[in-house]
Image (cartoon, rainbow, N blue to C red; front, side, top):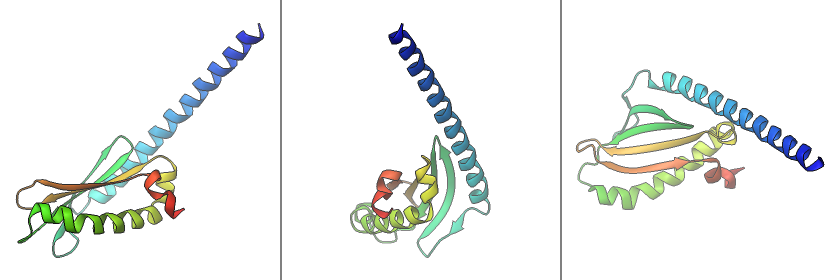
Length: 136
């Protein structure tokens, strides 16, 4: 009898926990959709001489920024090798500080970079709570 009551209690707790997780995920998605709506206004947006923000998307619990890079004479391989590590470090550090509450609540951010001429994907930078733990 005790074992049955304990099992019923544990199952009810799991059901309650699943309901809270599901509700939180729905709330996160709504927040991300609102952010998407606001950030999409006025696109494309020139960031600097080489970079343009061309799109914003939402996938599950992730807000995705899509950029194009005018690489000039640089090859895609040299962008990936030389520029991506520097950009990744700066972006992760900035987003971790700016978006702490989002990461703590299970949301993620991703940056996708494409060649402005060929539209080939250059690289992605994924930012999650795990990436940011060192800054908290």
